[in-house]
Length: 337
Image (cartoon, rainbow, N blue to C red):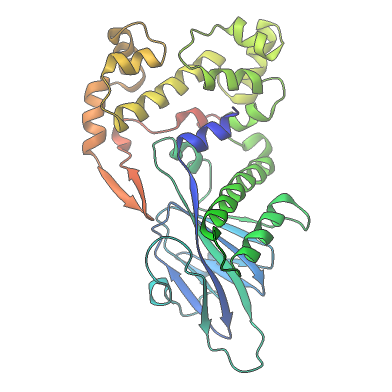
């Protein structure tokens, strides 16, 4: 599988749609910032989104989509800096779709000023951080008419008007699709500034080699074997990989193994020998030595610290394991750009 698919699956990313809002006149909502990743899409009218300073806010027009990163309380209103009321005051708590809500003051014969919907992306697992780290705090996209992302948003908007069997499942799946399309579109606009793993995956020559490493990280890959996957000479492959991805092939493989090791140490009670063996290390000693060389701390000690610092917490209804930044960041595969 390709790297983006692998990261999303290992992050157990999934969407959870929660409301379609119609705003009349002067209106405003305050979002608490508990979701790992929030999405807002305007269908009709316009909305203004800002976090701390209204002057730094963004105006959303019909078709615009905005992502807001984790833990950022923010406002959505008819005008930047307008008074806002807590989301909890107009929407029922809990997971799933709260169907349709109305804010502002409608009156007979009045047209809706703004129609928009909101959703949340939930993640469970360390490798989510390599995706989140590749995104800005807020991200606005304006997909053109006929684009795949615009078509998905139109489907989402239409489905939220219905009340039929299977609605929640369909909305969740559509949000999953939208996330992939949003990430694709954003990283493509970054071109050379996109994460190294995305640049490599998008390269027709390097993609097969990256997929091979992700599908079988335990294999004792050589540069020559990876070059065969890319159908290039050893030297040409090594040069191209380093140029596009930002790190040498075997260094990338080592980073990926270490990312998987951190995830398994934190999220499972597997013995060190089993974790090391699943990643291609011949013994517990060789795994421990490689891990300590990379992180500066033995894997057993890292596991204790990672489970102590921050602990496990709930974010937007999903379990997010404490990150323990003091003992090594998650997802360093994407650090080269």
